Image (cartoon, rainbow, N blue to C red):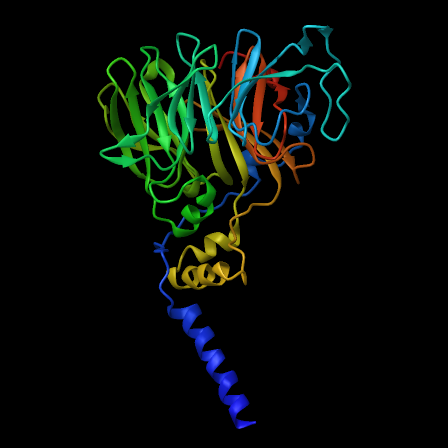
Length: 385
């Protein structure tokens, strides 16, 4: 009996030693985030987003971002595909049925999608350049250009001798300069949760000039650099710092040129992509509501190291998955929230990753759907402000 007790005690000590002391490639920083306003006040709960419609037939998992041009909506999927679909719901055979709600079988003859290319990686943000090419921020392959015939040309894969780890979103200036984000220098898309949990803030903003191939770092030390959008007259560019629940601004022109400041902060969720409607609003996709347990654990490195070790042996899950929730936010040029559209519980759409306005419609991407979603811009937001 004594030997059994000694053995059990030894196992307990070994387990405790592993949980408390075993060296791991995980070096968390202490992080304190701003207050969570919750879904009250300007973010008051509503169900407007439950009225989304879906374009055509299922395309594949996770249409993350959407760009619209010449009657087609383009997106990138988890399997690396770049696809497009007619936004009027037509195919070569004629008109398609009205887009259906999720869970409803897609009628035969519905609008079909076309596969243009496959990057061999994970295409995230994408935009059309002035020549009709699709510029893609691919999480695994860096910055790519895809021609109208589907040819793929890598543009930027390394900076200062090191590979780009996690290209995320992209926007393009009128002169062709490409701005894109790298979410993290430490963790790629397959381990993105570790970047949130570690709290190192290694995200960056780059500009790339396709005329001479110059790649320039504009910002660094961003807390998971995600969506990016040029503002009016391209005076500044906004960058979503997902892990910090804020939107940062980098000035490109004027007396504040090259300075960084905060455009909006203390959002009630995780800002993913952002877009400018060309007039007076920025649209922000919140991928989910904030996670209280995660924020509590971010205050101490000890707890997170213990949780990480337990996670490695399957005894604990990291608290990095938000509850299902759909939310997009309209923010004016002063950084003030003017409207939200929500789906509490994510009954119709959740994990919204992008929202782009075109001709009175909003086009939504999501990691949790297999099609592009659309919804009309609220009438009051179409009026001059």
